[in-house]
Amino acid sequence: MNIQQFLGIFISSVFIYNVILSRFLGLCPFVAISKDTRQAFAMSAAVTFVITASSVVTWFIYRFLLLPFNLAYLRTLSFVLVIAALVQLIEMVIKKASPVLYRAFGIYLTLITTNCAVLGAAVLNVDMFFANGKPVPGSFYYSLFQGFCMGLGYTLAMLIMSGIRERLEFCNVPKAMRDFPLAFVIASVLSLSFMGFSGFKF
Image 1 (cartoon, rainbow, N blue to C red):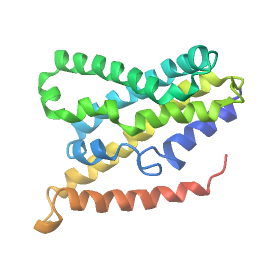
Image 2 (cartoon, one colour):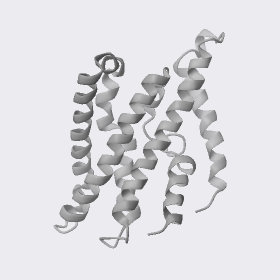
Image 3 (cartoon, rainbow, N blue to C red):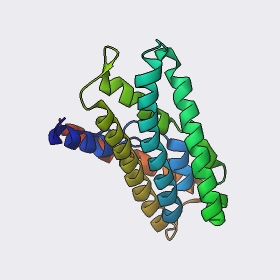
């Protein structure tokens, strides 16, 4: 376990293999919620919390339950159940703290349960930091940090997208390109720009 490894995880998760713009996971809330920066940031904070917490819980489940009892084939099912429980917790907190924000999220808050970015982070941690049925040295800390960094990458993409879309509200956009069509064009250009980071090797 060393600082270079953590630096590599940070740069890789946030820029090179950004969960949205490079791995193309979690695109539904990315397109639907990114109209408003406040909503985008709130959704990103919720997703970051769920990704980080699920990275910790799924690591323990995989390490101390699935592997010892030869149940690794149940990892997807167990990971989804963990994510669903965490999303329910987030949903209750937001509903209590900010009913307006809860209504603004609508169904997309509940859909964090099936957000492939969250499940992808948990599966990626297992694939990267376990070898031959055993955790690599520092596996837990790497999994925790990578989950958090993937949340940061998600937040970065959401804030960039929401900032662009808010500015476009003041532009004269052709009717056929308004809303989702233009959002997908912007997402494509952002994805191409993030491909430039793939030149970095760690």
